[in-house]
Image 1 (cartoon, rainbow, N blue to C red):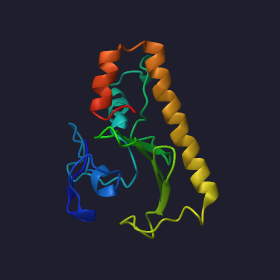
Image 2 (image 1 turned 90 degrees about the horizontal axis):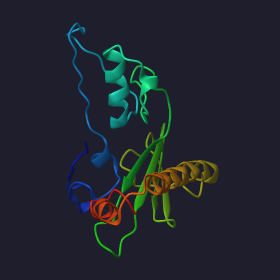
Image 3 (image 1 turned 45 degrees about the vertical axis):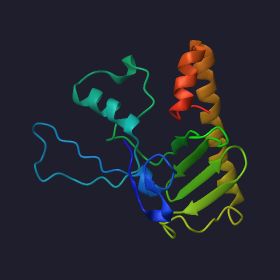
Image 4 (image 1 turned 180 degrees about the vertical axis):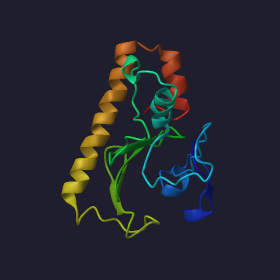
Length: 173
């Protein structure tokens, strides 16, 4: 469900940043009757895309489910959102939005860094000042995700204890 930092940027372990080394993981899927030689799909996908893919492979109608993901066969370019909750009370939630070659990392509602992963796969050069329209577009997607998260809790009326547990695990801010 996540990668590991192995000393990159002085970080070890997981869930300490939204850099590519902690977000990207290999996904290997096998099913009976598949070509044993396999194939490589060079698409940016999310783990939420697995369930719709399994539903299709089982021959079930996906419209019967409320799904956030998309079938891996149908996934085209789309934003993938990431969230890292604070591990200490003095930290803010960090969000990232990846779309094609671009990735925006936003700490709280303040500082942002934009990376062109084609030119800078190690995410060392901030290109936000050169690309304000891309920053604005990706920030809008992050804000939509924040609002969606808030709506889920107000709509479902999650109790305070559950909310505190989810905040402590970094799933909410």
